[in-house]
Image (cartoon, rainbow, N blue to C red; front, side, top):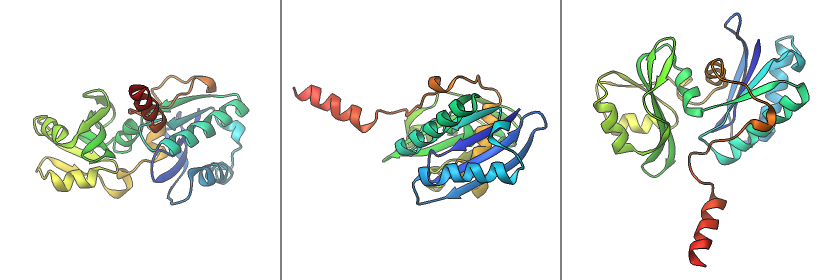
Length: 230
């Protein structure tokens, strides 16, 4: 199957086309951009398809990073994938942004910990056991205080590869001989990781695709605060 992956969950906009049968990436592009992802992602998809000598109808499934991440970015990515899935009559799936980050560093053997900035000393995170071919989560993805995460990793007993937009600060602030910072090409979100994570996922119809924020959006917080004050 030709699988398209899309990630608009952070500062990078990324798309890739993966041949799951041959295990070959036919095309990929990642752009660190200040533009709105809605301006970038569909032209990027169109360019990759054309440069690969394909048409959109050749795509058998579409995967998208569905959170955590930027509220706006996640909604743009999900909307784009739903629209393409409806138009192409193909199924889609959502992939955890954290799992996608880990899969971008899949060859590492040990513990891969994805660390994304949330607010203050709180991060979105999940740690995965990796044998170099497959990953298994060590706990459910969650929001966690950085001190708590550092303590967990210190007692984990294996080398830890750190990735995500919060990895560099975490690596600097919690120096440990067991901590390894992912190289630049594997540190931020990209669609190749989304594709690799999606291979083992169940694909669903476009109207079943959901976004996972891991925390309440501002509108929900404002509503709850209003209810408390009434």
